[in-house]
Image 1 (cartoon, one colour):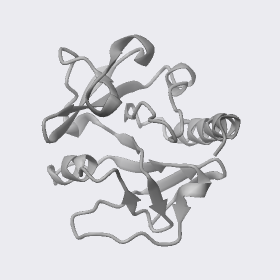
Image 2 (cartoon, helix red, strand yellow):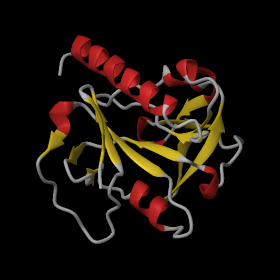
Image 3 (cartoon, one colour):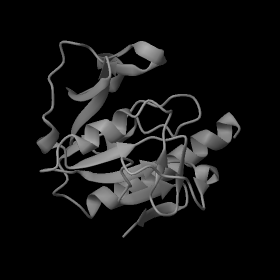
Image 4 (cartoon, helix red, strand yellow):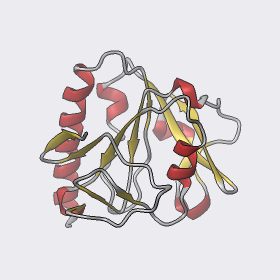
Length: 171
């Protein structure tokens, strides 16, 4: 995908998410991500949804945690694998306080299955607590939405998928 197309598609995804969040005012704490090359850029959501509380992932060894961030342009540092993540001193957000999680992926399928980068951080994070599960939205470009992705028993499926064409709730 060309850079100009990615920017336009990211803007369309932002508009769909903005509408979806307007319909869900109870979703206060949002876990999101800083994009790697080839992923939709959601960083403008902080400005358009300023009434929400934001959390970003941080990799600690083989675990992923989420931390409170007010301004991603000022509070994220480049860490392992060139990920922009919260500083180690940033406030940890307990798993049970996350209402919705925007999940990146290499690809998704129409059943909500996610193909990550192979390290299993999201699946481990989500399967560690069986008492609370946030609403999971896979964020991808339509060109990365496939008919079928193989899944393992430990893989966690999304509750919805958003592309530049819209947000589709699943199941």
